[in-house]
Amino acid sequence: MRRCPPGTHNAASISPRRELGLELASHFTELGFTPQGLAEHLGEDVMACIARGEPAPIIEATSSGTPLDQIIRAAILHMPADLSLALGEELTRRGTEAGVIQSVQSPATGTASHVFTCDIRPHTLGDVPRWVYSDPDPSMHVNEISDQHVMGLGAASRLLMQVVPTTPVARVLDLGTGAGTLLLSQVGHARKLWGTDISQRALDFAELTLAGTGASLKQGSWFEPVKGLTLDRIIANPPFVIAPEDGAKTYRQSTFALDGATEFVLRTLPDYLAHGGTAHVLGAWALTAEESWQHHVAGFVPDTGVCCWAIQRDLVDPAAYTAMYLRDEGIDPRSQRGIEMTRSWLEYFRTNEVTCIGLGMIHMQRLDDDTPSEVFTEEILTPLGEGAGDEVAEFFTRAQWLRTNTPDSMLAATYLVRPSVALEKVSLPDTEQTVGWKDHVMRLTRIDGFAYTHEIDADMVSLLSGLSPQGLPLGEVVELFALANGVDSEELTRLFLPLLTALIQHGIVLPADLVSPASFY
Image 1 (cartoon, one colour):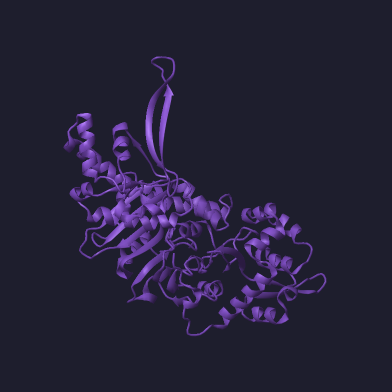
Image 2 (cartoon, helix red, strand yellow):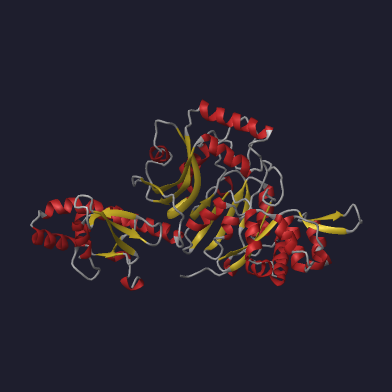
């Protein structure tokens, strides 16, 4: 795969803040403040404590006072440390002037030391160590999060990173970039990167996170900073939390009522996507007892011009949803404030007849303006494996093939059963004969991608067994099977084509003209 080299990003000038980010990155690399360096220095057990938010073992593991220990304490634990030892006097001074480092003095000894004012977490993205700068969260110390909070690389961002394609494109936008984490994952995959955010604080963090990438950062609301641009890829983890408009604002909450933020983004995306461009968005939808989530989300999609794939990852009741986001903000649902906010939140849901909230992701591709929109909806509750971004990119390729082919052209084509597909045969004890086993079900299951599975019968297995990229067209395979088994070929075709369409949608069967068989075998 061709990757755009980092040097292709063209920044007119490097701001002092980005210069600081570059110098800190250089020192972090030298000191071993990288994912690999931390793992070697702390060990597997202590690294797990960082992920779980358990500071005590980390404090003990960094008690030797080495330069790396000082960085870990100041950047992750937010404990006073000797950053002059780790970074040198000059860089420490510049970091202090920029507000990234704060001088502190021990009340007992009067000794001066320093602490980072932000979280700094090393990550490996594209085999390159990167550092994400953000506001401290409650993982290492007890604190409530303000409505101006800028989060780092959380679970939602990790999920979106996992599913966004990394095929080379010209222009990428991260809508509501925050600390710049999602945009960081696209470095090397686009010639031009844009990040927008309404918060200048967020962009200040993003400047440090994206130092050396050449990304352009613009302040403004939603799409306003990129008005008039068309993009090849848009990624967004917008403020989609569904919460009372008149209550205390959460940092993930927009000014829209209910799920209006998700609807606004989906309706606006086509105006900014180039033809064939794709968007990848996290969202939430508020559901009543009378409606399905599939119908509700489909109502957010324009009638023409897009192919949309909505995936629901979770469905929660109002009480669980409220508690989840209170804890996310460091608010104990058992506290007086937590109880008051919970009651307000639940009343908001009752007033609007919301019985459950869906959480998931939406992938969208721009089509011709006059092409009727397509909306595919699926529940995928299992963990996503490696290559999820490739699966998303391939989904749109398969959807386009199905869109542009007719039943006649499908019968004239040849196909490949994906080599990573397993045929499962399940047998159960024969309760009628009380001895032996009885065939129960057969399934085709992908052991890669999103692990799709389809139940299938023996006749369909036989038909699929006759498919080969170098073999007969599907229509002739059907004719031969019908002749050999004494069935009507037209009726068999009528039954088989819908199954074939579903198997192509899920990548279990692939049209031969979309793939090179050599790439699979």
